[in-house]
Structure formats: C-alpha cells, structure tokens
Image (cartoon, rainbow, N blue to C red; front, side):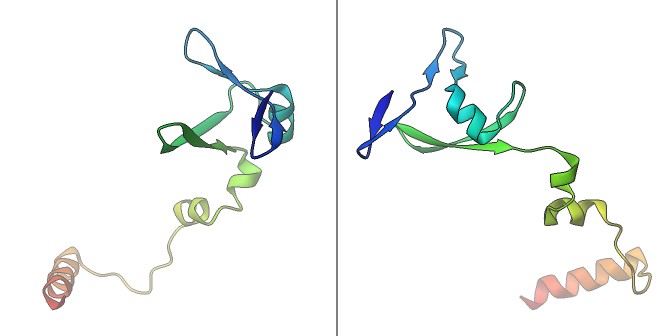
Length: 95
C-alpha cells in the first residue's frame, strides 16, 4: 500500500522482467484480465497514465471512429480520378 494525496492506494510492482503487476482490487474494479491491452502515456519523469483498451465487438460498434471505418460511404456522384486531382490541386492553391 502506498499513500497518495492523503489516501491509501494499492501499490503495483514491477517484476524482474519489467512487467507491471497490478493489485487485484484494481484489476477487479477496472475489469482487467490476463491479456488485456493497455496504453501507457508518460505524464512526467515519475508518472504515467494507463488506458485499458476494450476490444469487445459490442463496445467497438458504439465507437464513432469504428463506425466511420466500417460503414460504407454513400456517394452522391462518381468523380473521375483526373477531375478529383484537378479539384484537389485547386483547393491546395486556394489556401
């Protein structure tokens, strides 16, 4: 157990292979299972933020980014590749 901001917090440890061992209460609360993927984002030289990636299909289908990638786009009209190049070139020079 460690103290942080006056609260008693369960401490995790790093084993000899540099794996982080997470306290059972935290694993249960966060629903972390063996094989769960996480993202570690450094905050400063002494701390980092941990985000648990939930790859369940039910949860992914509610994600706007997942929907955008997996929902076919509806086209209003077909644009020839040459015309698209011309439009893109005009837009680039407008800015």
